[in-house]
Image (cartoon, rainbow, N blue to C red; front, side, top):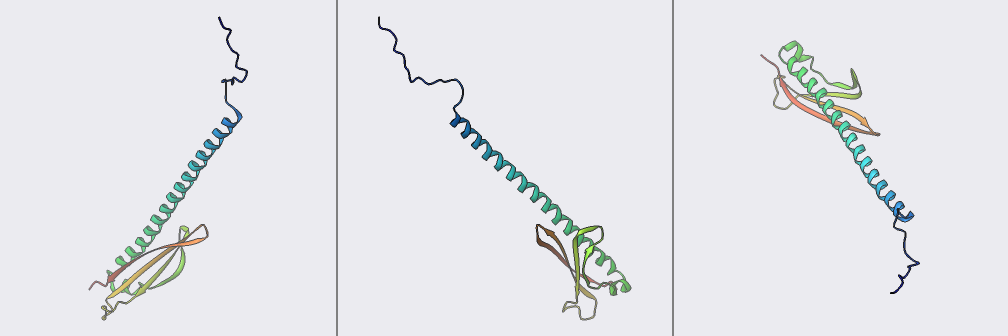
Length: 138
């Protein structure tokens, strides 16, 4: 019988090598970084949609106020342009109301109302605007 041959270069299969461990850390770190980046973009997009929804609500509120005022002649005359100003109760939003008389409103019975709401995000100004026509009730 032959004696078994000893393999002096036999690898110890217990545990991980340093190279395998470093590679696993790099892969895990890259995946974690991508996950955190995706979450931060999602949070920013959610905040942005909330700001846009709030701006639209503020503009709609202004348009509805103009529609209500158009029901009486005295209040209709008070529908006038308003310079850009901070919205009361919403310090991050500004609102500008522009009133014009459309060409078809020759008798002064109609007005075009444009409402522009703006807010600052990361150093840039974002805006949303809504428009409507109001006519004076007889």
